[in-house]
Image (cartoon, rainbow, N blue to C red; front, side, top):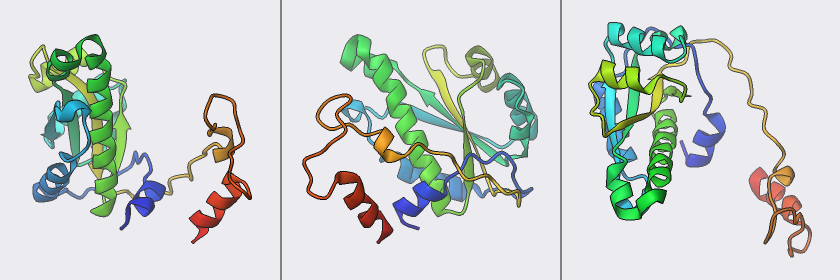
Length: 194
């Protein structure tokens, strides 16, 4: 699967088959994901793979009681060693460290598609509870939880996305026209249809 297909096929899946994901597959995904870009190449992420049903239930409970999460055979908890980044970049380092974790999470989700797996990004949870459940040190933040598994045969709706022309400006905010003969959006549509 190429990257374009992975991006277009990725969905937030909330219903999974009762089928384990091999740890070897998760290991391959994380081994490749560690090549994701990070500020100053500091790679401030750590991963916790969770497969124990009791622990998954505890986590789902503190994720705003999203109990559907327990259907997923595994979670990947992305932890943020933010001090690695704040020591280099000062006050802005905290924001950079979160961006780095978001980037590696996106990379994991796209790689999962390559392996026939589906994911859902969970950002709503009680940090203190996740730290307690997973024994994460105080100076490390649980940043993102990804559920991962094989999608159940439930039809996931097509995503609603804004049209590109409402999202893109040229040279400055609000400027909708580019200096491209034939129009930027017309050329782009032709390119994407190939």
